[in-house]
Each structure stands twice: as C-alpha cells, then as structure tokens.
Amino acid sequence: MVIYGVALLAVCLLAGTLLGELLGVAIGIDANVGGVGIAMLILVLLVDYLKKNNKLNVKSQEGMAFWGAMYIPIVIAMAAQQNVVAALDGGPLALLAGVAAVVVSWAMVPVLSNIGKGTSTFSDEELGGTDDVRNIK
Image 1 (cartoon, rainbow, N blue to C red):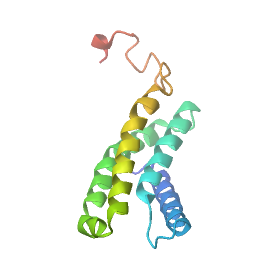
Image 2 (image 1 turned 30 degrees about the vertical axis):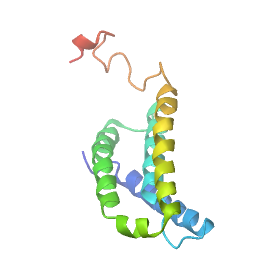
Image 3 (image 1 turned 180 degrees about the horizontal axis):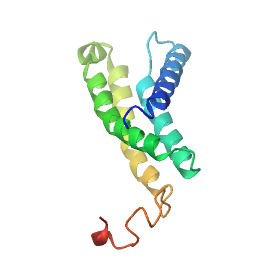
C-alpha cells in the first residue's frame, strides 16, 4: 500500500530541509543548500538500515519502493525550477561550484558502487530460490 512509508519520507524531508537551511547559514547563504538531496540520502540510508535489521514490514517496503521511485523525478523537477541565469550572473564562483559538484558526483559513483559489494538485502527465497538470473520469476 502506497500510504505506508509516507511518514518516513516526511521525516527525511524535514530533516534534510533543516540540515540544508543550517548548511546555508553556515556558509553565509540565505537559502536552503542541498536540503532535498540530503533528504534523499537520509531516506536511502534509513530504508537500507531498516531492511537489513528486519524493522520494515512488507507493506512499508512496498510503500517505500513506490516513494523511492517517485523521489528522483521530484528532485529533478525541483532542480529544473532553479534559476540558472541568476546562478550564472553570480560569477565564476557559481560556475566553479556547479562544475565541482558534478565532478565530485561522477568520482563518487565507482566508490559508492563498490561499497557493500557481495551483500544483498534480499534472501535467496525472495529471488526465486536460485542464483541463476534467468530463472527469477
């Protein structure tokens, strides 16, 4: 059911927004800096932790799967609303910050993909009882 997991999503969004506001204040910007991205990271880490410790029931897992699938398009839509022209008017520092964020993100992909290699949150029974990918139902 979709409604399950919404509270977890809301808590993550509130925490991410708060941390984004605090980060903005810390660097002297009167804006939320990365609150939605922080919220997404918190959500991913929290759901993974809850799954590994069997603290998330099946209905909540289904709800979180739905919201997890919806969250990335929401983040993209929010990012699309940002005023790129104003950022470019901010000068070379704004451009440098954007390029640095992209480069760091690209560099982190292989690092993050190697974390937890060989571990799975799914049991063999959930995968169809076999390790052969072609036989998964």
